[in-house]
Image 1 (cartoon, rainbow, N blue to C red):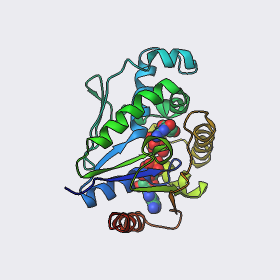
Image 2 (cartoon, rainbow, N blue to C red):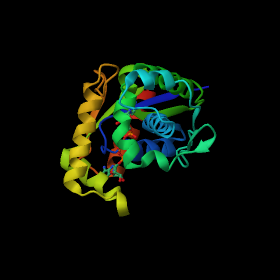
Image 3 (cartoon, rainbow, N blue to C red):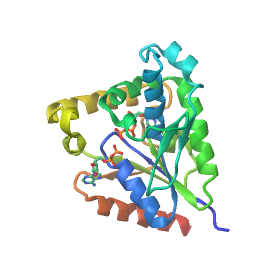
Image 4 (cartoon, helix red, strand yellow):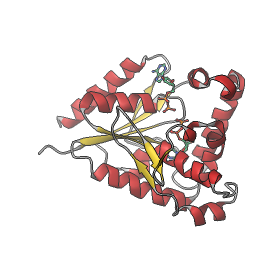
Length: 226
Ligand SMILES: Nc1ncnc2c1ncn2[C@@H]1O[C@H](COP(=O)(O)OP(=O)(O)O)[C@@H](O)[C@H]1O
Ligand SMILES: Nc1ccn([C@H]2C[C@H](O)[C@@H](COP(=O)(O)OP(=O)(O)O)O2)c(=O)n1
């Protein structure tokens, strides 16, 4: 049997990680894992269970409690907590604004990194895993590591386009919230957002989604042929 292909895709918010990872996985028949969704699910559970997310000690004590299960089908990426599908509620502004604090707590990371490595080990053909520290920490031996970037303007415009109805806050506020989350995710002590030394950086500002997908599929083909 062929060696499974492990693709790590990291980068800040709005660079296209989720869309690109799902499309690459679907195109190559690989599994897909959204690790950001796992940090969001952990955060959602904490907010729903009265945990003070600004208190790292309280978060650390609770980190082992929720049962988080991620689907790995790129066509239908579901995530559940204690048997409840939380795919929608983990995307609210309330969760988004609390997720950086929760994901900075080492006990949270330890628990989720274990789930992430198990998902990668269980993917027979291979997997595309997206997040912030996949290339640096979770899967340092990945076949291919990609670090996606895009200008702050492009990222804010993309994110703003997704927020509808009462969740819409305007471009300036979206940009500010993005910058704040990036700073928190890059500045934390444990496993911060960072480009791995051996990652290929792809600036998506001027590229369409199809162009980004094509570039990554080509790189995977080159690596797999080595
Ligand atoms: N290359 C691209 N050009 C324009 N828009 C894009 C591109 N890649 C992704 N998008 C759009 O930007 C938004 C954020 O993409 P997403 O994949 O969720 O980013 P991330 O996972 O990095 O936060 C989505 O609405 C997506 O459709
Ligand atoms: N591997 C990861 C993935 C996400 N996180 C944290 C940091 C991020 O701000 C949140 C949410 O990640 P997610 O990928 O859902 O964020 P966006 O889709 O970019 O808005 O989780 C992390 O610490 N490590």
